[in-house]
Length: 80
Image 1 (cartoon, rainbow, N blue to C red):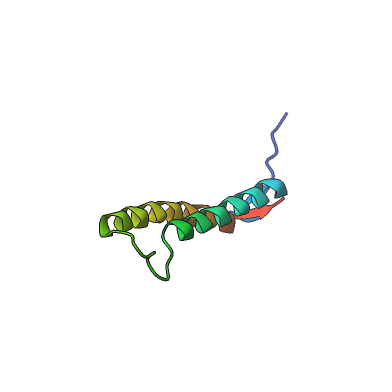
Image 2: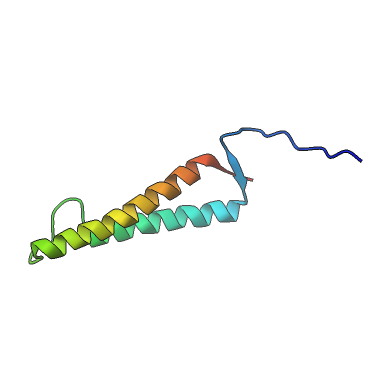
């Protein structure tokens, strides 16, 4: 008995259940909100010392990088 493989519709896209896509998008949005809460892009919070600000900025950068990785995954996904 020979095996038949399904032809790939697009090599660049990944099929995923719609629920998984929605949950991943929700996680992405939450990471962006957390990063903005930790270190707002517009202006530093008053009363924060420089070393605290640099720690917050570094932590926010981690969340932003994580969100960017998820965003790239979302771009490659297509809900099934």
